[in-house]
Length: 333
Image (cartoon, rainbow, N blue to C red; front, side, top):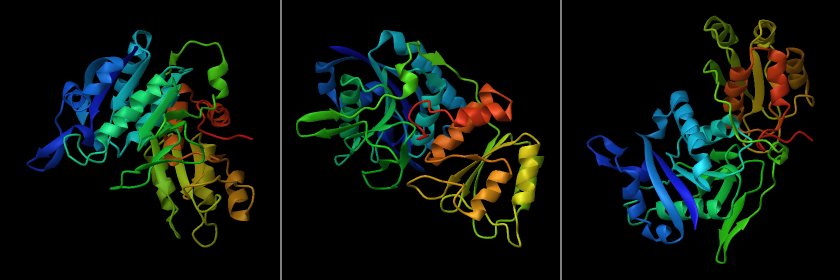
């Protein structure tokens, strides 16, 4: 019988209706009461870390979650973390970078409806998360709607539907069928090294995400310089384009990178890769010293940049980090 720690952080799964709407109120043993059968197959300990709507989960909470997982890893075969869905992809991505060389399963899950609702998806999501631990799917993942997604590839794509998360630019790590869990795991190169898990929990909060619209005012970039941001993620158009006619952003962009600000460019498109070398509007970006995010999700780009800037103040080293695949977050070939 495998030993599993259930860490709870709040979210819809643990919510009840209050005077101002749904808010997290349930403790972990209350959640387990709705899936009592799990204790027949697992030895389960529980711990409440937080009790927050995930809209309120920020960098401090990421560190609390990652450090708590790291401390508990030696005692358990795997860890399940319940979390609100709205920012789960950010948390799962950040924890993927903080816990280097993680081989044990750490599975995030939640639900679109509270667990005490008759029609809830919470119970199936918890069963899927524990099944992922039982199968030994390594690293950080998100279990939702009978699928297991790499934590750095999960994106929330629906606000109401039970198929809330998709695996973007990567296959599922596992899927549940009528005959059980079917794991489909490609082990990242970083996990093949004979290294113990490491807690690399220095992160930089001074990162900004800018989504372009046609005609974005270039002064936005100057203001970001004045606010002392160390990293900027730009969601550009298509495979990676930015305006340079009439309202050109190139001058401000070059000034940022020359001052040592790391700028990473990804696509506004959900699927497939960015390639700044195809069009003139992309090659001009490369000439300004930006870093291409390739096929990474926005959540992974933001958290990887925050993590990279926590490891180093050298922009060249940040670039090297973005050219390294740590947990399956990027395809480099």
